Length: 369
Image 1 (cartoon, rainbow, N blue to C red):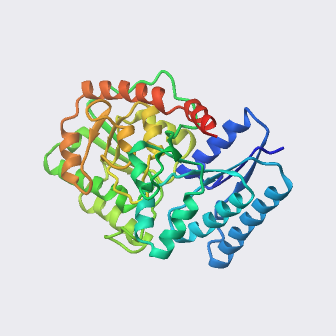
Image 2: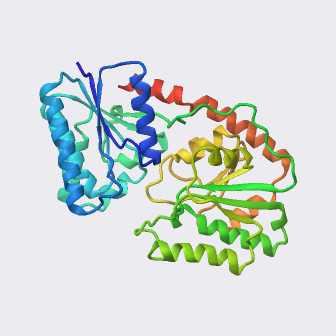
Image 3: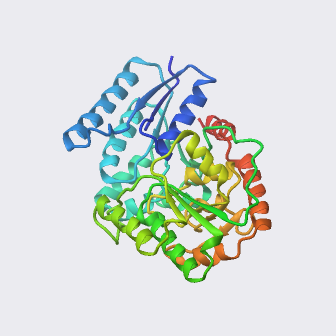
């Protein structure tokens, strides 16, 4: 018997959502054997429309096979927040409902309300009827409850923080040097604020304070066409980023590390004093990168946005900064001292241990299942 069917993105490639899905599936699998997995992740080498349709159809046929030939009770499904994704969600949810299964939906995005509001009246009716068939809707934070405001039954909702899929490092020791290491570790998407960070570096230079800092950037350049304002292609994005560094003579104070994993990523996090993410990204919910930074005892400087206030308490383990404001970034970094960093670092670790460990995430998720 397979009690539960897990449907979601299983890595590779790795993203916050696919890592979270893998963490849950592996954690559940370590305790129980009564489950099946349907991987919905798009193959990176096959992104044309025909290949996507085949992937969608494959997911539906796999689900139908399991519903017919396996004795299951629950279908757990990660929902999408765009029209093409909803087409698959519609079929998965309604098919599972037709077979009388308990449906658990999990949203890892923070913009489902925007998706709903921008849909036609007919589409909104379909979204409402489909989502309402779930017995449980899992959100990452109570701050995200309004993203499903059109579902009035509050008893359907449960809130479970993300969890880091690795153990927290022990015996962390932050530098006592006068120069502060500032880390931006995320995809380089304009609405995640990386250009605002570069502009803040330029401001710190004008204040004659740049000698106090070294800025590290790590991640892949990506587009978000709905929010991009400064460029229309990856090539333009890279040219703008590196030209800002070159033209303002910042090469001695800014390092770009590309896409990182493993030991290099661990070293950057371990050596970072401040994790900086001035995001206003429209899909943002509860960034896994911030949870990683908590585990490594970084001070968190980010925006009061979506689920981030669950991970950042102002002046406890970091500072809230304004979005789209290089001045806010520079002003908050300007006041840093080692005493602040020591306090923020300790409190970040305490907050991680209290709320964001892998064990707590898996335990809380299994309770909901």
